[in-house]
Amino acid sequence: MQTITLTQPDDWHLHLRDGVNMASVVAATARCFARAIIMPNLKPPITTVNQAIAYKKQIVNIDNNFKPLMTLYLTDNTSVDEIVKLKDFPDIVAVKYYPAGATTNSDSGVTDLAKVWQVLEAMQKYDIPLLIHGEVTAATTDVFDREKLFIESVLDPLIENFPELRIVLEHITTQEAVEYVTSRNNKLAATITAHHLLMNRNDLFTGGIRPHHYCLPVLKRETHRQALLKAATSGNPKFFLGTDSAPHAISSKETSCGCAGIYSAPAAIELYAEAFEQVQALDKLEAFASFYGADFYHLTRNTEKITLKKHTWKMPSHFEFGTQKVVPIRAEQEIYWQLAK
Ligand code: NCD
Ligand code: ZN
Image (cartoon, rainbow, N blue to C red; front, side):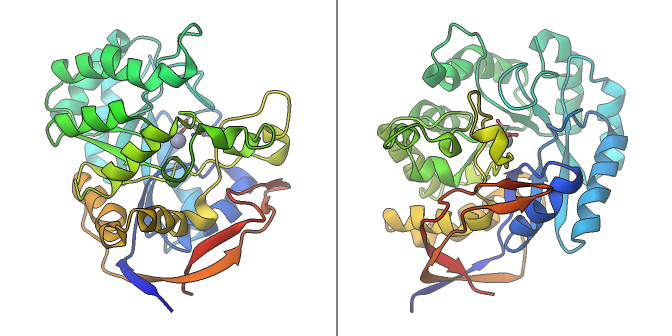
């Protein structure tokens, strides 16, 4: 049987939710990943150091072998003082910028970058990475063009003004994002999800509307998927793993106005292996999954190993999600790689 052994990977973009919903979600990630960057888009969002510490405690109480790397949610009201505090809290590693209204729980997001200018200056000074949900939000903008327009109209001017700020353009979905990230210096990196490497926008409509394939940024056309595959498997350290695994209860997905988010944690590394195998690049998986993210965040690389075997198994129809249920990616379908226990 074919097997591959990798240094234990980390997930550089993850949603764990909170309260009773967390237990199964933390376990799904901790079965494989050593660390993860925990997104702060709770309700209410994690905007302060104290909230981030309390949230971290909730996570570690579920599994104290798993290392959550916390983030603050940037709002129009974030203070410079809160940023200055971060130098004493090494487990809070970044600040997340959601344009207001861009995605799930982004109502408190930034309405105008001018409002957070001093905060960005402080982040640049203290070398705190800014993680960006890169989509413009104007209702008149075509949903498939939001990332491309964000890069031109927001990201490029931002980088001109803050050339020393470390930035991660999260969950990139377009050829334009690949080209832009490649063209800039090593202060700019990007995460890529497994679902954007494996699916295109046809997967939203195969045989009917597929709410469990709806995420933001939305799936794009095949040429973009090919560009993402090329970037992920290029060996360029600017591109690394971030699942954006984002569970929602079935009742919030299978409804007339369903939430955005794909729950991929139960098969995340297996799906990345499948994507890399599609382009005969399994030899590039370890650095993408286990080295480049740690290097970008100035953290040590993991030393434990994991093994994946080529073995077909069937993803369950659902998992427990607090008192509700969540449908994972590939529910009741085959997965071709499996993490060895
Ligand atoms: C995320 C969520 O549900 O929190 N949803 C998603 O579609 N990716 C938010 C986000 O990362 O945009
Ligand atoms: Zn996300």
